[in-house]
Length: 132
Image (cartoon, rainbow, N blue to C red; front, side, top):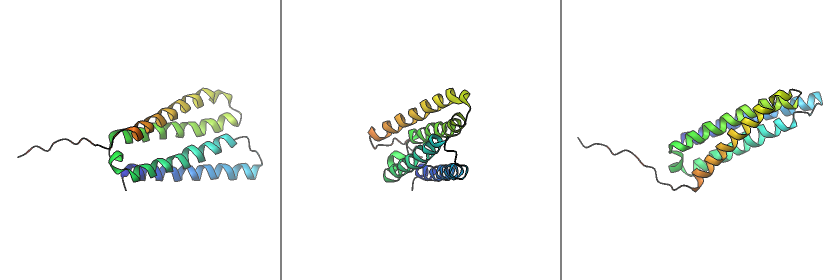
């Protein structure tokens, strides 16, 4: 399995654990004000990242391209910033709204980079090995 696919699956499971922990916390406290952060952790973190990982596992040639790692870094940074900022905003800290907005734009940039990966060709350019 390509390295990027493993990274996505590992990151996805971390977000699933976070999402479930948020859900349990809301259920126990009966305070569901952070439902949006819970949903984003599960959908953008767990589901979408698992789909990205699956795509790269099925397309190893594209997984080897540098843009795949850049896309992973951008998307992961966006979601990792968005989930806690959204949680804080929804639980009473309105000052986090600009952080949520910036994180949303970073996440969207990651999605656009994934679209570039999907619509690009399968070729990978490799440096020529010098004959000795």
